[in-house]
Image 1: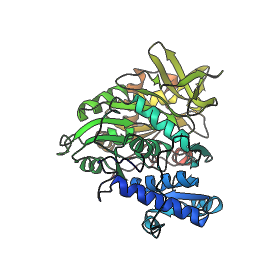
Image 2: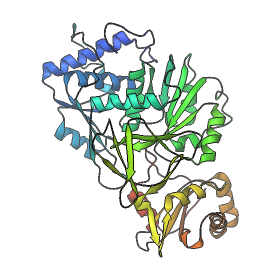
Image 3: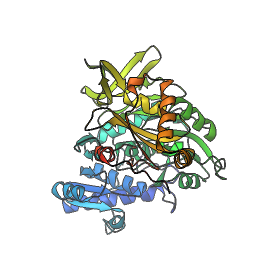
Image 4: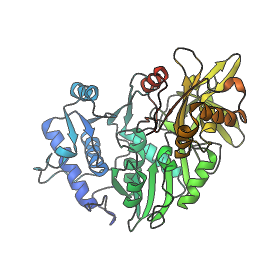
Length: 437
């Protein structure tokens, strides 16, 4: 994107925002940063278009960007200690508005070295600060463009259910549409119904979502087939192969699953397959424990993951995190694989399996489907457990099955579809008193 040639496609809708006005506003903000001597700012935005406008202004003015995963007190303190100010949707409208003739400069500078600090949510331990440069973010968008089967399409509206404060949302909801010149969907949609309604546009539509939301799509929604959906990207969790195929058929659009992390960027993708294929300009391997590592043009040093994999001629299969592959007796068991198989049962909507903190044996935390809740009420807890154990015994040895069980109507997954260690340990230690009113 540059200031001399603008696409007729708006940058955003509701209200319509032209690319020329978007560039002018970004340059206003950039000039205000320079005038005020701003060196570092925190961003917390619901509106992805406003976020993109400020982000590009930061790149132009070489202002470091801090992205908290939420706005809880500890993250407000982090921003206060490391940034000159916090910009939000509330103060965006007035910031820099008095700049009447901002410098007319390009917004798209691929080799820009401005830093973006992403603070992880710390769902599996202490939060970490991951530093990316603007150049790495543009390279990430370029890589994503190379792997998506619909990336050459024009006149695309991109909407999603993931937050731009996290690397996944930042890459796909902000950097990708900026790179491709697509329309940015402003809001993050928490429910399938809102996503479907937002897709009723005179453009081709792309969804950026999570497995959890896609699994709960309403097949009877009256507007589900009233828009031109050309593709769906999902990440942050694993879909069963049959689930992925069902969702793709339901939506009549290709479903691309992405695998990666904030540290690594996208590592691999898969579509209609159980095998992951590594992305272009990336090299992968495993360490002595069988955990995957990656080097790429976006992360030039070797980045070690904690994910165990098996390699095949067609690609590789994820076995789960090394810390989720446990030794029971003298055999290795993948807790993640048991989860996937447990979720295939019609009584189960979602599940998470971990080691009980006191007894070091697997505990299954199960979100029951409506059928499962009805059966729980009529037959009781023991009957549910017996049915689920029988189901798992068709795929796993008896010693690997969960020893303890907890049931609920919903698992408290965060915006990245993860279960926090604190929540899991709390339910492990709670008295079994599930009630389904």
